[in-house]
Image (cartoon, rainbow, N blue to C red; front, side):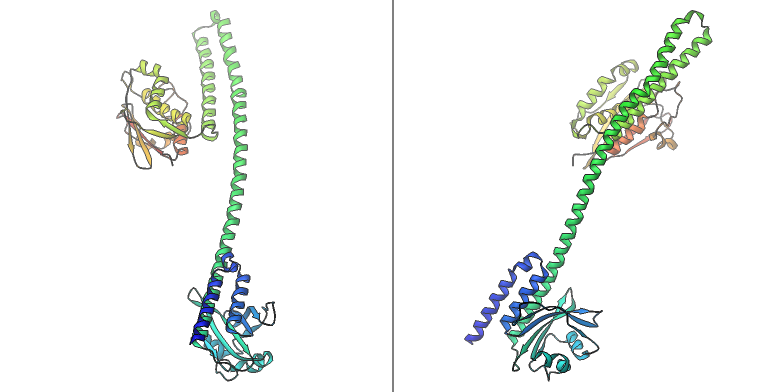
Length: 429
């Protein structure tokens, strides 16, 4: 009894040592198998221990690792076919453990006698299936040489623990492989992000250079035409009749409109592709105050009234873009009103949890519902320039700014009944 208790204590210490082994902790399958098989052979006092895994769709088992007390190397080359040893293969599916005290006479192992047991001097075998994720994937085989021996229940239980460690080693190895693959993928993604960032920075610099060149090169000829047209008009003013003066005004106004259009296009390009500013916290009341100060002349001339509740809202965005967004929408609300009517503009905001929803309502001329989406495209105008001025870019720019800030913009309107422009802006993440 004392001897059995001592053996049980030794086996428990060995299992504990295996649980702390370097092979398992590092996910190293080869080292784990080596440590497990060596511990098994030394504890059960057997000549050889091998791990055999199913191959050829369970038509064979192949030795993937083995340990011999007389050798320090591991052999992984033997293969046993199901057609040669059908009884043993069937027993692997039905038996919890195959304890062959005399392997030459045991019904499950006797078919190995001539081709395997005698050549290797094996007298007794103790085999246990290896299961992983509910399926049997192989077997661990303990081979005893010398006189036949009787396997005890404790030895069978110990071998079952060994199969658990083999399963754990496979699981940790697979997890390590997945981690390694994820690390490789992450490194590749980081490299791609780095490369893409460099490309974007390069493109950004190219766009800056283009914008500068376009601002100078495209508008310079227009300034020249306008300047000479004005000089010509002054030089021959006394010789021009009413039609001539009208033609000169066409030249001057057309050139000025073209210059303004180029300027707006460049602003649209810069505002939506070149970001020179960081996202910052923005006090909404301060923004509205800044915008109304910039629109002071329009407000005075139109006698417009802007109503905005005194609530403290902090936005998160690019200051110049948010200013332009509010400025364009408020400016439109001032501009698009019936002649002789005083603009009334109401601003409101709702807290929607992860974002703010703004509404800018006016008492203007309104928009037909069928144009509620088209007005946000470039150069889409619903009126002639003689009726209402503008470049046809403002609302398209608003849409790009809102989308760049993680929101959306839309309008609800009827002809002659005013318009309400809604847009959302994401909060600080």
